[in-house]
Length: 94
Image 1 (cartoon, rainbow, N blue to C red):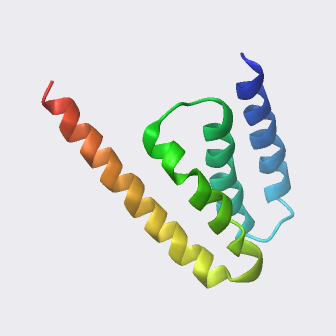
Image 2 (spheres, one colour):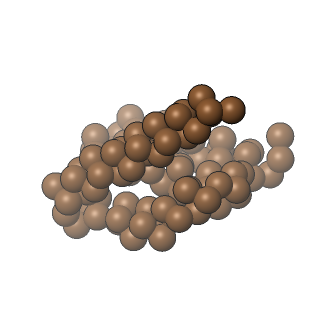
């Protein structure tokens, strides 16, 4: 396992433990933070790279505006769904 993957795995394991005692909304925050960390060191993907500034900015809303954070998660999930559809359709054309 390379160092970036190990660091991500370590983050996920410790975050899992932290979930036990943290408010429930921190779970989604930590998951999005894991995606951000994943993009920083493991994958080189145009779609993910383009989302990095948004992830870094919007995930902070978990502390100040829970409703805005949840609304952003809905938008982010829709972006991922659209990208997954685009990639799946592109794969059918091969």
